Length: 204
Length: 204
DNA sequence: CGAGCGCTTGATTGAGTTCAAAAATCGTGG
DNA sequence: CCACGATTTTTGAACTCAATCAAGCGCTCG
Image (cartoon, rainbow over all chains, first blue to last red; front, side):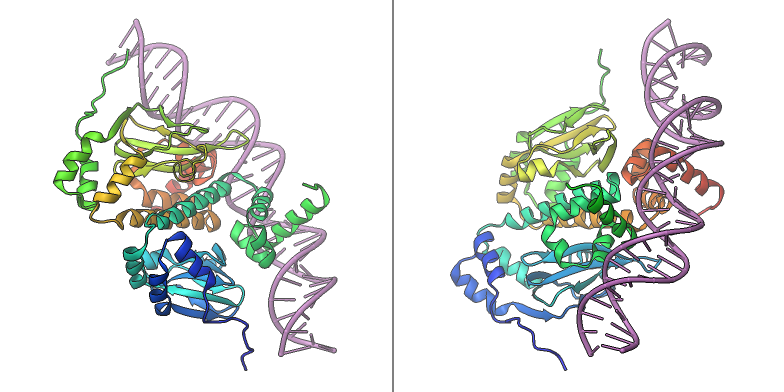
């Protein structure tokens, strides 16, 4: 028997705020738009997307925490992105290039997401007063990724971990260690040792 | 004395094509726009942007080849991006977030670039018939970066190199080996050994 | 309570770095 | 066209960081 979730599926305060404050959608249009949105509750460990899927949804995380990850030839998992409340997550191969999904998107916590399809994007494009905002988000994410590439290129395990917890302190408290290791591209054992070293040696 | 360059600063066939075919700019608007563009010839080894700069230009590479890279605390260079003809390059911290540039942008070959500022973007936004195209480019670049992150997370030096030369075969013939090593996040010595191994062992 | 999951710890292995130096290639001026 | 210096690539040996393999610990949840 499923336990009852404390997630209310009617209100979407975070997404409403995003639409109003960021995209400049009017109250009228908002009232028209919101009932059309597809919402979904995902339990911890459930999937929104699996490798090979072709559903072409983007997701806005109204509440909870998700991750996307790939599995390589050796069966190892590699986390691409964490997505907490107020962030977007999708498989870009699938959504923007019509290729089958290369990644899995899974709930780390019981979550509540809004599913965005092409129709939504079209509608938004027409009614948004701030058409550049989407591009700003994309550019921020790019800068983020470039920073991550840079970290992977030049920093050792310890420094990458320190950078991660300083940059994503809230997320780092909500996910198990092995996921952080997977995100950083190191093993859980190495992360464990790194943490020990930080705890004993330094007090930065 | 400077040697004469065989680069003609009047015509911009690649950029014109981009504006017409991709953004759907009309001949009329094109004729109005092109004379306003700032163009620049950069010689090999010259810089368009240095760390700390605040010029806020994006560049379209009409001809030639550029790279962007960062320098870490140990003085090591890490290549973020190669930009051949028909591609864009910029420092996103600077252009989109108004922070001083974190990277250098340098010409690998004698090049010819078009400098794009905010005014250009505003103008384009007004006259473009295909307003989504910019986002498509950004999403492609994101997918690219996510793939690179994934490669850095799971692939060994040899596989990353093989992936690079298969994906960027043209670029790989135009840049010295040590730049490829820098892009891949390995030393030139390691790359040399990897290449030797590929040459002797396999014939893929 | 016991099974499973996540974290830690130790011993060993291996990929890649570092340092040093030789060999090959490139560009330039004579 | 050749020669010279500078840059790039290759090679070798020692070393380092992180991965792997293998146990053991501790907590939680059914």
